[in-house]
Image 1 (cartoon, one colour):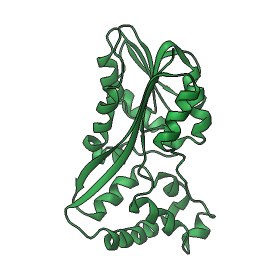
Image 2 (tube, rainbow, N blue to C red):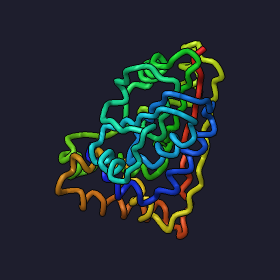
Image 3 (tube, one colour):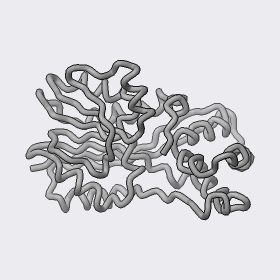
Image 4 (cartoon, helix red, strand yellow):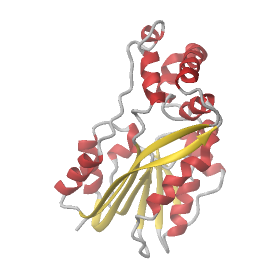
Length: 253
């Protein structure tokens, strides 16, 4: 997907808060070999590397634009490198597999989580944060608009259904891997935005990306239709935008 670093960074501080909650779940040890799956533009991967004494960290992302931004910001160093790759096909062996708001773009978490867990060294840890906001009205209106004319034909029936599972399902998957120290919880981050247009700006950097990829020149029409619906559904100003996220961690015995 064609990621836009500038659009994504419009709500950088709000998007950073869950990272630091996830970082608190990491069992800090010296000389950890770690990978950050879906590292994006790298500033939070830099923070991860700084938190791991004598660590060796690789930031992995599929987007050349995001990785170019990371390299341009000079986040790379002797203990941090950036590589392009598909996180769902992660190879190698790791002491820490860390992923902040990335695996929601991979399908089949029933397969993905065991695959990632299998790449841990004995005593290694998997730490993941994934947005679970797909039932919020903003996402429902995206799907509704995509099913309406003329967008249904323009999108050729495309509609993205989130692969994110429930906290019970993630707990069960980790238990089935004989994982130790399982922690799984959902947290609501209460963001206060100016109005519904700000919500559209927020999702333009994330949930709308796969739609933009397919809409081409019809993107402005789709956005206008969505903005009208959003103003009707969310008329308040300022506006509370409660964002749900799932965080989980587990260790390999």
